Length: 366
Ligand SMILES: *[C@@H]1O[C@H](CO)[C@@H](O)[C@H](O)[C@H]1NC(C)=O
Ligand SMILES: *[C@@H]1O[C@H](CO)[C@@H](O)[C@H](O)[C@H]1NC(C)=O
Ligand SMILES: *[C@@H]1O[C@H](CO)[C@@H](O)[C@H](O)[C@H]1NC(C)=O
Ligand SMILES: *[C@@H]1O[C@H](CO)[C@@H](O)[C@H](O)[C@H]1NC(C)=O
Ligand SMILES: CC(=O)N[C@H]1CO[C@H](CO)[C@@H](O)[C@@H]1O
Image (cartoon, rainbow, N blue to C red; front, top):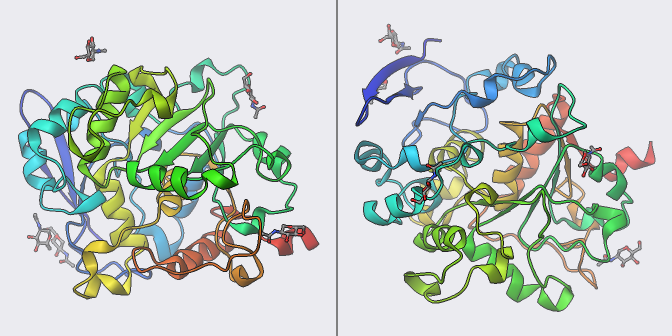
């Protein structure tokens, strides 16, 4: 198939490529066209891997995914993205999928603080690491009950980077889930909900370590207000969290290098091409987005060279409690803001193709 590429001139001297992938007869499998806004800015950062067998090279060879997967979709947004032209393009999309949630002035104010190379690249500390290899190996940890008793902690910690999200309780569960957190993924909303709902189970604060980076999944204006306040180490200026102090969450880490923000193009791409749910055809479409865990796992797939996923939903999910940290069995409840069954099928498929290594109990039995 032909992918039609055209140029769009942005302010100043920067030229940005937008890719029109709606042209052509690609055979989408997990999604169906036409996808709203299936056109994304281009960022080729992760195409330059030194790892010969990197998973992006492998996924591009799989017929089912070769026209779904876009190696150039931008993962992160930072100051260079805050232009009028880009705002016009993206302010049409709701929630995490665009910038409808934030005014141009507030967007600019927030992204202007994401102005270091660390804001533009997931693995900003890679060059400084003494033990780096040619392949970046990532462990992505969901909070699923399948991890209870898994004894996978040591294996998890041996990866180059460890991704976690939301109510990722570590204390007391080290043997099963490991100790390190390289990336903590959250939206302000999910982070606050986790602190509220799981406080009594031990989620008393976000992971804080030298290597920890905080990755926002911005789905509301409060995320843009919080990231700015966090970098400035100052109270939040606007919105429903006004006057709250971000060091409460991130420690006294107020430097731009600690923070990253997913690009709305990435979230919309994930929704359109990997997790296009039935609800999107109904009048409730606006409550839907890919789950935080799914976004985090797909971000790893689009940046790491090897990905192992632990604590993600598997077909035998009824056997396990909702979370690994539950004290008593709680059955997993499906809400319509995410589509966990669709996510389950995707992980299984990616595992069967050898793109990710999905932790299941059957592997243990072997
Ligand atoms: C993208 O390609 C399709 C199919 O060729 C075309 O109809 C559409 O106008 C294009 N969109 C843009 C924004 O160029
Ligand atoms: C980033 O923005 C801040 C605040 O405007 C400024 O003080 C700093 O010098 C900028 N850093 C870079 C690398 O441009
Ligand atoms: C790599 O080195 C860092 C820093 O010394 C250490 O924290 C981490 O555990 C090491 N990673 C692996 C995979 O050995
Ligand atoms: C976690 O595993 C232990 C040991 O297998 C089991 O006794 C306990 O019920 C499990 N917890 C939950 C919440 O399922
Ligand atoms: C299938 C299809 O519509 N392909 C078109 C994609 O765009 C190129 C360039 O405009 C056309 O030549 C193809 O026919």
